[in-house]
Length: 83
Image 1 (cartoon, rainbow, N blue to C red):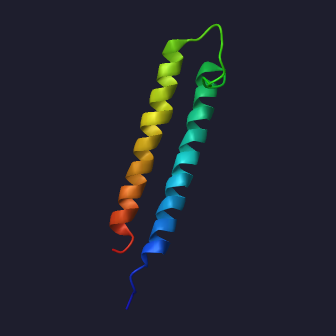
Image 2: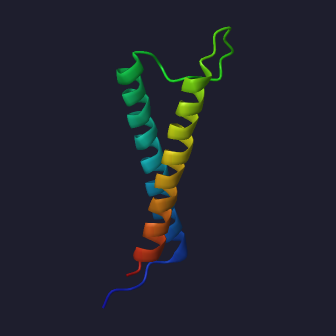
Image 3: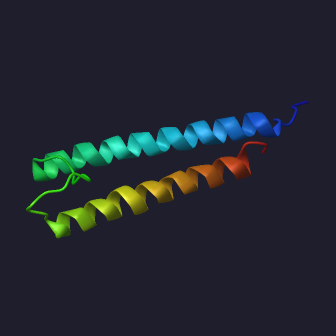
């Protein structure tokens, strides 16, 4: 008979997987950006020439997409770890 996982172990696994997904997707996004635009993604360093279109695009990619994937990972594991 299989025992249920305790809450601490479950939280550690969920947190670890979520961080791993976030870091992996961030690296994929950065590499893809560099391949497409032949430059590093926009950063927080001030510049005289800011391309706002690229800044907004990078914010959407790195914020929305990565956060959504992390949330989906958390939800999936929360619902399925004890199943």
